[in-house]
Every structure is written in structure tokens, then in C-alpha cells.
Length: 175
Length: 157
Image (tube, rainbow over all chains, first blue to last red; front, side, top):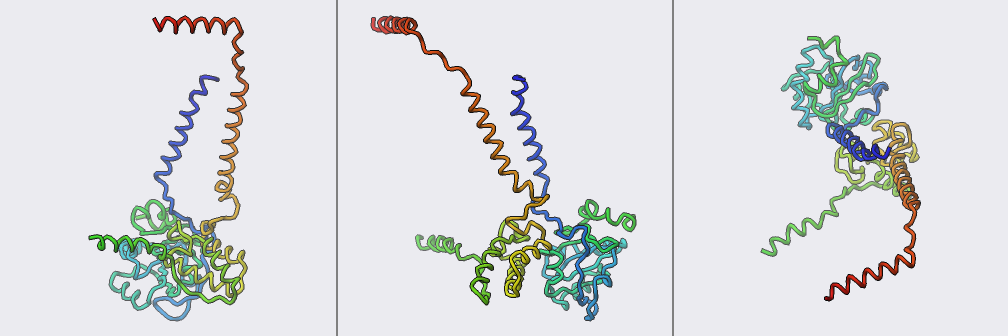
């Protein structure tokens, strides 16, 4: 017993080291969506294509990605080519044009290509608020029953896609 | 040269004035004080170590506007906090409700202090239990004095 007690500090140190080492690879700013496994919030908003308001079930037919973007958002420009690539692979992407001017947004899609099946035009950020958006770009995974399954904050690139999102699209994403 | 240095120094002194300046009209003084209290309690999801009262992020501005609207519409503190938590998670409160997710947050500090106190008490008790050395007897003292006298006497020679 007396001998074993000598090892207490060593064990304590080892536990602390494991804990801190784990902390090195965690992202302390990562926030899961408050809507995980809950339905995507209902909305009635115009799209970039037409001014007639459309509803959630009309626009989002899961499984699909919902990508929050805006022309004022520099990172959105960075991730745009990858979204186009995903769309070419057959992944359905719905755009949520967040607190933006529709004219500018339409021009952006003409210039850079349009990976979106539809674009919800949320000029006031109302849907963004219900969704818990706190900055563009953000990308949500909505499943077949219309539930939010995942949220990625920041640029969506191939590493994020392979690591976090592609598992929700196993059938469609197969090359 | 001195005057050139004065400018940046004075500029640093103005940092207190960097807090967000906005004007909202309140229907009552009570609403205004509730606005200040809640905007300090709510945490900005974008710049995570600031409350929405201090933050300049667009989302914080939106949330302040929303808070003002809800207060003026007569929502209670609980309703407003529930609305925010529903959208941004318990994260958005600096004092989150106690539930399964936040239990560690609430319990750990108290538990750590309790464990620390326990260790301290055990340690002190154990030290008390060590038998004290018996006082030296008269004969031992006499022997020691003799030895001391002898060594100091030897030192003088």
C-alpha cells in the first residue's frame, strides 16, 4: 500500500496529460445546432427565382444540404467552387441567401455558377434567426423527414465533406 | 517628440468608449433596466466571450434588436430566454439552466472544493495523530548541558 501511494502523483499526471492532449484537438468554438434532430423551422419566404412566397416543404426536400450564404461574405466565395462540384456530383443543395440584396445575389450566381436547387431569400434574417444562424457560411444537413441532422459552421471544403457530411449522403455521394 | 507620443497614449485612453452605442426607446424604466440586465446575461454566439451588450458582431446587433422588440411586446424574462435557448442552445446564457448537459459545469467547482477540503482535513488529522516526542528527562538534560559546556570550553582553548 505504502509503495503504491508513491505512484499517485504519476497517475494523476498521466490523467491530466491525456485530458490536456485531448483538448489540443478540440475546437472550443464549435457549437452544435440547437435544432439537432428537430424539424427545420417552417417559413414562408420568396426565393431568388420568384417573388411568390414559398414554404419549407415546397423548397427543402431532404436529404439535402442547406447552405447559408451572402454576397458580403468572403468565405462564401471561397467555398462556392466546392458547392458547384458537389452539385455536379448530384448532392441536392438548397441555398439560404442570408441578409443580402437579391439583385446582387442573382448576379453572383450568374458569375460564379449556381449549385442550388432553390434559393430562399431571407433579406431580414428571420429564418436565419429561427435556425440559430450566427454568421455565414453555415451548412446544415436536413434528412428525408425534414429534420436537422448536422450543422457545419465555416467554409465547406472536401475535408469537411469527407469527414463530417458525406455520411449523410452515402447512396448519392458514391462516385 | 513628446507630443507625438501623446497622441497614441491618449488614443489608448479612449478604449472605455468603445462599447456599443445604440439608442432604443423604452416604454418604461423597468423595461430599460431589464434590457440592460438581459443583454448582459445573453452571450453572443459569434464572438463567444462577449455578451450581446458588448459585442459589435452583426448577430449581436440583431439579438439586441430582437430583445428590445420582445420586451416592448410584453414578453417575460423567462419567455425571452427560452426563445433564445431554443434557437442558440444553452450556450447563449452565461448562467445556463441546470440539466444533464450543464450539470458538470455547475457541480464540478463545488465538488472540486469539497474534495480539496476532504484531503486537507484527512491530512491535518493524520498529522495530529503522530505521537509527540516525550520531553527529555532531568538526567538527559543534565547530560546535554555537560556536553555543551565541554564543547564550548574546548572551543575557547
